[in-house]
Length: 156
Image 1 (cartoon, rainbow, N blue to C red):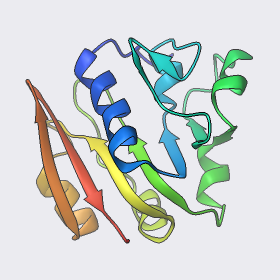
Image 2: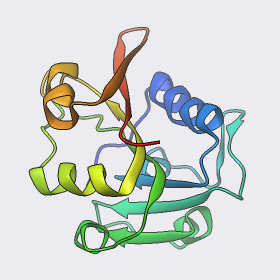
Image 3: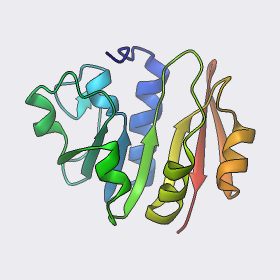
């Protein structure tokens, strides 16, 4: 089972990026809302509109509760999303493990071709330099207290 995310900075980052970008569609890699135990798109006075198409990529298929089918417009597996031709305005990936791993090459390639913006949590195992190497595009580092994130423009 994936560790539940409890870091308030991660909550803020997730919702604030969506608020500022105002995307038509979001690809939530790892299903952040599932991992924080949310029961809606409103968490701790933070929310985003139901009009945002929210697709969850479920990397932990062990706890599929029906509530997530009401929060997410669709839920897909990693294999399903790597084979889709869909385009997303924003992809968000928040890995809350002690040492986030490098993104696999097939995921990097897919993101480059199907996503306009990427928001990702960095850490000792996945740094801003790694992101620069992987994407080589416009990268804006973001620090919230002790946490570091990156906002990447892949295409406009």
